[in-house]
Length: 584
Ligand code: GLU
Image (tube, rainbow, N blue to C red):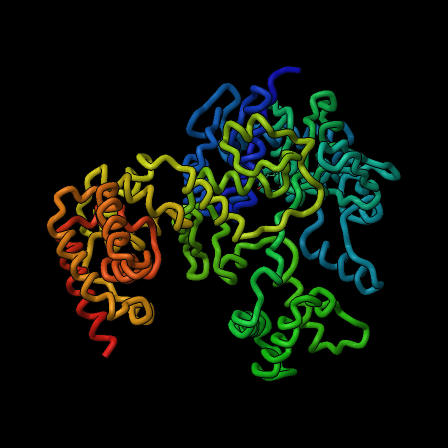
């Protein structure tokens, strides 16, 4: 087999959702595994949906995650251009070729005429579709006389070119993920291939480009599966059947399970949030007051175990209830949407995005503090599984383990806790020197001074307790600053007046200890405890609270060494005096 060439083909209509990033990842993994090429093609023919900045966003997201492109608008290879807007001159020819081959026809119907037809069909209880059943009664080159068609074309009348889907045929595709998928041709609509402004639709441009860019495998989201029937027909119609790529349609990414975020603590807030969203969507809803709707939503949410049956629409449900249930159904189940992030408090975009409208701004995984490697590892598992117990994979290991055959058919549930778990694993297993170099600017931004060795020690001490690297400076505040509060409850409990004298004696010993390294401190303090026949906690607990304010934390000897003698002694004197005062 020749080297695979796969493409990620987003439309720059806004920020790239993590579902899009997962598509890019799977394309990348497959290409690299097979020694092939990973290409970015920007599908920007629909100028009405074009959003400035979206292409740059996509490129930046790929760069941040390290999914290196072999060909792109910025790295032009032999099959450019890589933006459809720059290829637009080439599509019309293929639209017309389809007509010449008898695979498509000119349609001259005006919007009004199509609306009239739709109304006629809907009045009789049907749904309108321009297809094998209706095209014979519409205004197109199949129904008009040849001379009329010529005259219309010559006079510059508006027309579209529609694909003529065959009658009574089973169209099929052998999808790698789904096996053989069949489509009944009579149910297909005669999709527009060329619009009246001469521009191609997604379908025509996509197939023409995949063919010309020598794409061997089309790996994309499940939402494109229905279109594949038309694409298969297009390959046939254009005589490219033998070059048709292999298809793999990826499973949907689903919203998190309600039980993972609805509990006693969150239920009121969620009921409130969902109610206000409901009224935003149905501003003219008059059946129930805001409070009544909230109570009903709350009642459904609270029974989280049975939530899916409680939002099923039952025959006896009245119209007002149906509306609320439908709203909840789309809010709680199905495909992960960009609004779910806002709603439930997690990112669904790789990078933050600030659109033009007020409600079009989203926080990204990068800005929350995710390591891009952890994000990719998490995404890899949303739909794919190596078939072993191993969960942590570097990008190279993913390439090695990946195969399209191991992609699942059923939707993959998004689980933010799992995403954080991956990040934590990457942090814990990360190299301290590398973490230290990333900590450097964060520590400096706080106005604190720390040399490289200190930063490295900090990394080692605090990484196990953090989810994100940026948690470390906050947790380590007491290392640099005296400005912290005591956990008073703990201090009261752990300070024992009968040991006060001995604890003060230890402060003097520390004051006279020259070697303030963690190792020596351990020897000195443990020796002192033993000699004085004290309990470990009698000494260590007040010590820790006095120097950090907290009852727990990383190894205390390391902490004292980092804080240094002068500050340690100062804090102990101040802290012990205060703890003693709490006793009276
Ligand atoms: N432009 C389509 C999108 O936005 C591409 C779908 C495909 O990969 O064919 O996802």
